Amino acid sequence: MKKTATKGAFENKDLRYIFFSFLLFSNIAFAQHFNHYFENKTLRIDYLHIGDAFNERIEPVTFWAGGIWSGTRTQLIESVRLGEIVLTVKDAASEKIIYTRSYSTLFGEYATTEKAELVEGVFEESILMPYPKEKIVYEFSVFSRSHEFSILYEGVFDPKQTPQLCFKKEYKVLDLHIGGKPENCLDILFIPDGYSIMDKSKLRSDMKTFAKYILNCSPFKENKSKINIRAIEGYSHHSGITDPNADVYKKTLIGSSYNTIDVDRYLMCLNVWRMNEIADDAPYDAILIICNSTKYGGGGIYNFYATVNSNGKHSDYVTVHELGHSTIGLGDEYFTSEVSVRDFYPEGIEPVEQNLTTLVEFDKKWKHLISKDTPIPTPDTKEYSNVIGVFEGGGYVAKGVYRPWRNCTMKDKVYNGFCPVCKDAFREVFEYYGK
Ligand SMILES: [Zn+2]
Picture 1 (cartoon, helix red, strand yellow):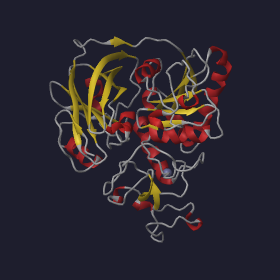
Picture 2 (picture 1 turned 120 degrees about the horizontal axis):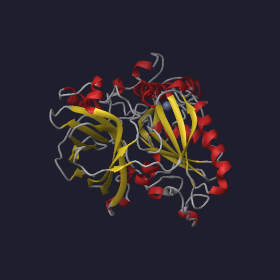
Picture 3 (picture 1 turned 120 degrees about the vertical axis):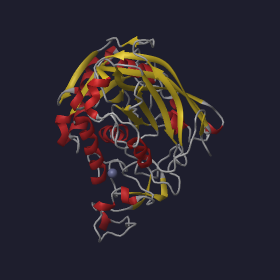
């Protein structure tokens, strides 16, 4: 199954490492140039991501300007690529690369499903960047799972010429935990979905409960001064969440729904533009949608958004597990649950996720953390509980993909159980936002 882009496709055989060595040889504007190139304001591009298992394209629709810039000002060029899409921004006059952002999308998952071989999907997506002072050239590229690098779209944005809409304040924002200034912290924003005005006290108490789920879990717990948590106080027409398999349909703030890409527990939001429009009432780096429902569900996509159901036995675990995907780019270490995605980690290719390996380029993963007495692969037995090893099974398959720990939070329903490899990945992200 070969995916080709509609425009300018060319191949690149390695993953994130080659991409960034490519950047190193380009004209990169360094971090101290934030004030030279950008205003303390956010530019959001709403666009459509359209395609199937074989082709994909991007069509920008609306440019939005406003708010403050809550992202990093010192690491404008990412040092690693963890998502399959990369936004690269160049100053038009000098052609210097002045900003990059990698992320993943629901389209990327859809494209690996059986349905995508027959039916084209149309997905809303949004991307944020600091607002440029002068004309820029922006480019969306995609890295396929088998590492083909293609340019999907190249466009020009001129702050003085390009038509744009302004952020407008709609909702009250609740400050749940403030660790520091937005530009020095990972700003997590909760959007409640499926809470009617009758659920007002529940909404407020649920938001506080979910902030505690995050702050009481390592390594969030040790990094409270690098985290802000806020919530939008927005109400839905109906109470509850759409669940097509139970024939339940609700009119809610952002229309989250179970059974996304035909997996019952996969609870996601397809109204991504509306979600971001509501989110722009507060500074944010990461969105967590809290769905008013007792049914188990959730999802998390890197630098895109995460979801969780509000009242379940495992909501604390789901919250931090999905933030592991959406803010850190961690992979699923489990391999026994029902999923729709296929060929997610092709044979002979090293995954970009820091907590998974196919042993193809294990030197670049957690090899340095393994004691010389630990066998590789490591037997999945009690003797090796709480030992960093290489356990076979992970990334939705029992064979060929390996994980670092027997039962990390990215594998089992264990709250506050991130393994040392996942914790290291968290630390890197706190540093990215905290500098
Ligand atoms: Zn882990």
